[in-house]
Length: 402
Ligand SMILES: Cc1cc2nc3c(=O)[nH]c(=O)nc-3n(C[C@H](O)[C@H](O)[C@H](O)COP(=O)(O)OP(=O)(O)OC[C@H]3O[C@@H](n4cnc5c(N)ncnc54)[C@H](O)[C@@H]3O)c2cc1C
Image 1: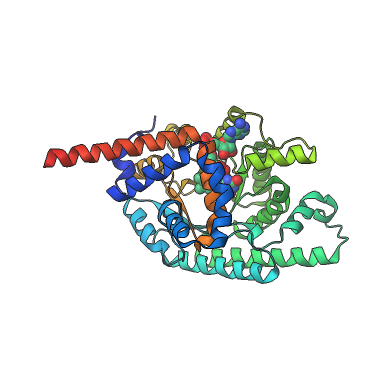
Image 2: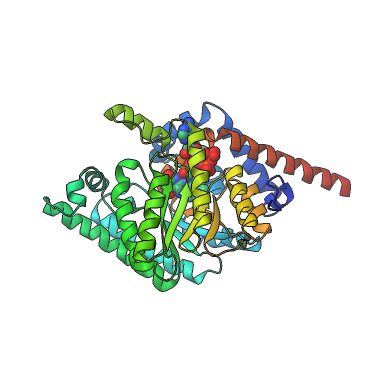
């Protein structure tokens, strides 16, 4: 058994000031109110458009500060430095989403390359994360996902093919910059109706750039029925074509949207029927990756204590070093510090996923975090409880010293 306790609140919150802890208690408490998130997710985008200074100030000082590294890339340095003091690395994410048009796609590509170059100058930023939809047209991804004829190379729409070529060229430039600067690129998984072209492009990039080490990582959402099989299939392709399979394992962030769309379109939902099914596939994927570390490099991206403990225990059992270069644990900035900092303390490779971007542009990311924290209510309640315990512990300590 690995020598870790996710209950150790001293390790978990050593990086936080008293004020920071109280802010986290306030935010997780607020998110825990049943009506808060549904109302806030509807109202916030409207309120942001109105530009009411009181509201923007409130968001900036609370949820933004909790979950985001800053408005600019330079602003993230402060957070990254604190994390580095506790042996925690950073996955930088330029979290601007949902902008359409070629000019915006080019801007996003440039910005991503800037982030890569910046990451290379930092002591603890080994990865950046990207969304293909930030530099590809949403409708184009949807069309390619639905049209096997287009995907298989039988092209019957010249304009779409020209657009797709541009997307591939942007992705190539990003991966090339990543390789040159020795920074890993994690390609986020998106909604299932956009994912197929993203998978194909990412595997192509791995074939090109992952020959010596993992530069490019695809993301698998194990809440989908088909992803455990897809992991094994991707591994087969990697072995056959002699590249290292880079994989980020997640459960999946779009469950409600996926289910609503399945009802709307009359298709079967791609998502498991129960949480237990998702958990079973997720843990099976962890085991599969750990059993195949020769040619799989993976990032276990989860706030689930059992899954993180499973990986740590398997590594211990198989005598795999905690800082093995093909295993990394990761949690989102602002969440599950008890997992991150306790793993880091025992020398496991751990990264916080740290988004940044102008306040108005990171609203979709923040809304997902708020929603996620209601759908993972058990874990959030647990986190709030740990934060309260640490605040009480510090109070007692201060009183004892007076
Ligand atoms: C570093 C990092 C990177 C991430 N990148 C991505 C990404 O690229 N793409 C993406 O989609 N998500 C991403 N996520 C979010 C992730 O997919 C999860 O939404 C989130 O981490 C919650 O899952 P969990 O394993 O942490 O926690 P848990 O609380 O154990 O799991 C909650 C998750 O279980 C699943 N679930 C819940 N109820 C049910 C049910 N009834 N039936 C079936 N499944 C259910 C859902 O996926 C839900 O989000 C990322 C998360 C992290 C930490």
